[in-house]
Amino acid sequence: MTMSVEPFSRGSFHIGARISGPKGSSFTVETESNHSLDESATPWLSATLPVAMKSDIPLRLDGEVDPAALENAQNAQRILSGWYPRHYRPVAVEARTSSPGSPPQPGVGCFFSGGVDSFYSAITQHDRITHLIFVHGYDIRPDDERLGALALDSAREAAAELGKPLIEVRTTLRSDFADPLRVPWGHVFHGPALAHVATALSSHVGTVIIPSSDTYATLEPWGSHPDLDVCWSTSSVTLEHRELDADRKQKTFRIVEYPVAMNHLRVCWENKGGRLNCERCFKCFRTRLHIEFAGGDCATLPNPIDPDAVRRLYINPARRQLLRKSLVEMGRHGCDAPELERAIRSAIRRSYVLQFFPR
Ligand SMILES: [Zn+2]
Image (tube, rainbow, N blue to C red; front, top):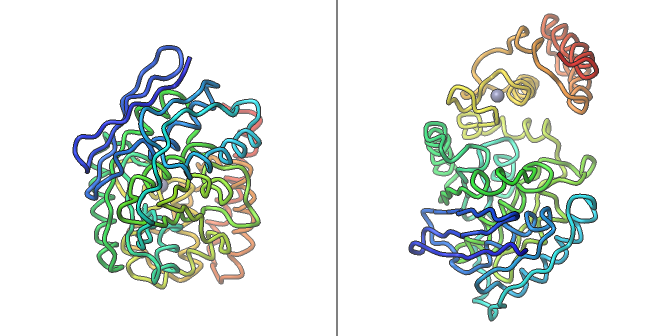
């Protein structure tokens, strides 16, 4: 059995691939953009290799693949199989090697979801960045048109205020391929999926920044990681995993100084009620708390924190650690909110009990 990938294109702004997966399954993935895309097989290497590794079957790409991409992907295989030896095994990759293409473009792209990490990178790397890249289909499902349009409008306005053109991409790679095959998005696939988009944009950008969600102190095996992201680079596009020197709170403190960030921040992945931020989930709550510490005012998280909503949150062990830190910081930042403090303590206690005695 082989995972075979047959790339196709419907003009230069719309590429796709027919993929035969494990156990006779088959998939069609489509990626389109307002910018022209690489029609070769190269962007499909990062998009399919982790899945072939998980299925433990050789990968065959019917088309030409950049030679540097093929060589770098061997390192990606070493890293993934080293991190997850029971679930990801190195596999043979068969593809025709293309002749080296034109030299890399001088443009520098940066993925831009509108969250804390992407605003921080967009602000700190502002002088280098020539394009921001928004993807509909990863954190927002491709069929969620309403939220997709809302997030895209917000990203367009933010990009215009930052003075950068926005590359808009829409893809079914996650929903129609990785999710049905249960490839873990966080631990494995979101980095390779971003690399699919980055390498498809080779005629516009020669470097693409992936804003880190980790710091040097918190790095662990994760789908987007400084060691792994760079392994998806080609001879035309280099991937850079950036901004590991600031944690989420430090990043929030920096971006509250920028009205563009406070007017367009989108941190929520719960996607409830078709709003940019639900204001009920842990991510919304923690971002709101940091903005309060920094004395900021955010138009997309406008309401005061509701202690009752905090009390009801289930908080996993790693996040409980973060919240205990936040409790200490509340005093330090002059945040006098005894009811909220009680709510946080109550959520921590309740989540501890729920961890061992789930309802
Ligand atoms: Zn939320």
